[in-house]
Amino acid sequence: MSDPTQPSATPDFLQHDRPPVPDIVLPRGIQPFHLADRPVRGRLVRLGPLADALLTRHQNHPGVTRLAGEAMALAAGLAGALKFKGSFSLQAKGDGPVSMLLADCTEAGALRGYARANPEELDAMLAHDPTADAPALLGRGYLAFTCDQGPDMERYQGIVAIEGMSLAAMADHYFRTSEQIRTHIRLACAEGEHGWRAAAFIMEKVAGEGGIDPELDAEAQEEAWVTAVALAATLTDAELLDDALPSHKLLHRLFHAEGLSVDRPRPLSYGCRCSRSRLSDVLSNFGADDLDHMAQEDGAITMTCEFCNVDFRFDRAEVQAGGSAP
Image (cartoon, rainbow, N blue to C red; front, side, top):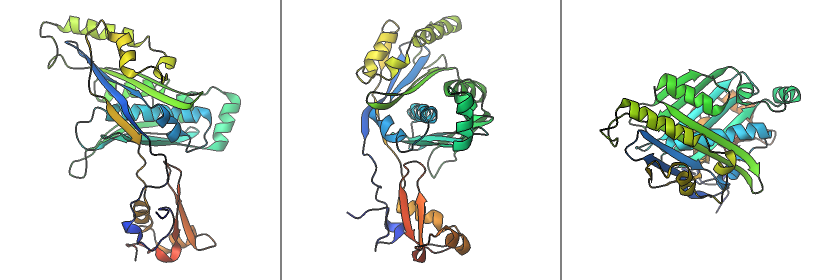
């Protein structure tokens, strides 16, 4: 098989082969759950070795890598609630050293993400504060959540100002202010003996109908939610990131006395969707002068996928300006 990142005799618009990236699938990456007769449902996300495969595509500072891992775990958890064919993405843009944080996941579990950092600004910040957290790294800006329901449906997007002392707190702020949904979100990402690991615990309070005990009044529902949050607050990063502790057993530790019911797990996979075809379409939108400027001395244009950090090489003579490839 020819290398899909290099020019070949096959027209670019026909080249949809996946680049040489890890082929990893986690059959039980997302574990949905709910508490019987209580207004509580959620998802436990464990990226396992998939986290290391995704995060090590870029050589970032550990603080930036940690933030990217949390973002991808969060995106996977939110996509796990999708009931249609589409994707869920989160994007943070700020004036801090990390100017862009992006993660998205399809309903089928194809996950990808990256963080774009300014090395000079980052070094200056870390020299002053080696433990800089998410608010410091991102700075002032906005957090956007986008639900893409496919080509036949309008995209839904919610945007709020970055506010909170962690990415989990920022996401909670979004759901409280934009969606009026009460959530409990815990994110973890760290490098261990077997590489990077990332996880997310997302729990939300649902409306008092449909699967809720009809005899449970508003006060009792609130008490059930408060109890669930108190139990979830006992989670540690070590538990979340422990490959040897299955998700259903961890949930059992937390909620075995609260009517825990685990639903069918959902898979996660290495989900970069780049190809020569996609990037060729991007190039075709540029004018001739721009394409000439992009071309290197040997007459080639190199485009790098920001998600998987794979280079695609195009012969300048084969790229048409403002139109399709020949």
